[in-house]
Amino acid sequence: MRDGVTPGTQPGLVDSFGRTIDYVRLSVTDRCDLRCRYCMSERMQFLPRREILSLEEIAALADVFIARGVRKIRLTGGEPLVRRGFLELVAAIGTRIGSGLDELTLTTNATRLAQFAQGLYAAGVRRVNVSLDSLRADRFAHVTRGGDLAQVLRGIDSARAAGLAVKINTVALAGINEEEIADILRWCGSQGHDLTLIETMPLGAVEEDRTEHYLPLDRVRRALEDSFDLTPSLQRTGGPARYFEVGGLGIRLGLITPLTNNFCDGCNRIRVAATGTVYGCLGHDQKVELRDAMREGGVEEVNALLDRLLARKPRRHDFRIGLAAAPSVARHMSVTGG
Ligand code: SAM
Ligand code: SF4
Image (cartoon, rainbow, N blue to C red; front, side, top):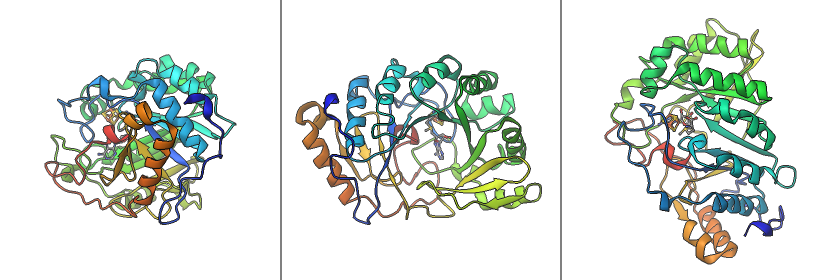
């Protein structure tokens, strides 16, 4: 399957609302070395390994997407850097940069980034998103259930030293990091990292009541405007974030507000779970299963399934913040590929 890629030779991925899909988020594992409270249950059950696509299958799937006009791929999870052989996968997909693929990136918790940064750069990665919800070691350990902040900061430093641009993602959590967000923004300014704030989304059951920690970002923005000059930026990435230039800091602030603002009109993406299940929307169960098609049917069957997915891709998500016991969508972000 891998040798057959010729970018743009297959019809593009366009849904029934005329939205062109040129961005795919590919989850390489549902496993993780942390257990962030809003993301996973403490006793998270992970998928059996036989259900997970092999690295070769993931690379082959990337080629199918590139052939159909996908220009950006983000590798995610779970924690992508815990997948054995991950760098080989990055190197394989990285060979397509400049011949169909514009960008290959990843989202990581950075616990292993110090070991991987140079290899990622060598394989063609130029930017990484790092999730970091607190700069206070005790709070970071609390949110992640045991994470080591110093290790993550070393990972971020190594990424910069290797030439990778770093964007920080912070989930805004009432009663946990709300009063620290201005400090995180200042720190990002001092380090030259853009910052994106994210509202908690009701994905998968966790022990916590997400309602308790749900923090609407319009409240955060108003509080930040007391101390910072935020100028709305016209930049759109086809994603859910709205961006602001932060006066004096020379960085951009992004706000992802799925609950207070619906972001779906310009949606340009689909998400592939590590099992080969492809979801049309983070907030719906609409999906197709590619694993068996890849193993038994080949490229034509995979393409037919993608067409079926696109024909029914939902217009918008229907998130409502609810109790942890009754999430809007049963699967966790770590399964869908956040
Ligand atoms: N482990 C990697 C990381 O943490 O960056 C990649 C996967 S993680 C699922 C991707 C992003 O999803 C992280 O920024 C995380 O904070 C976010 N996330 C996870 N569960 C979420 C939820 N229920 N609501 C909002 N964001 C969530
Ligand atoms: Fe792991 Fe990322 Fe989920 Fe945290 S947010 S538990 S680091 S997958």
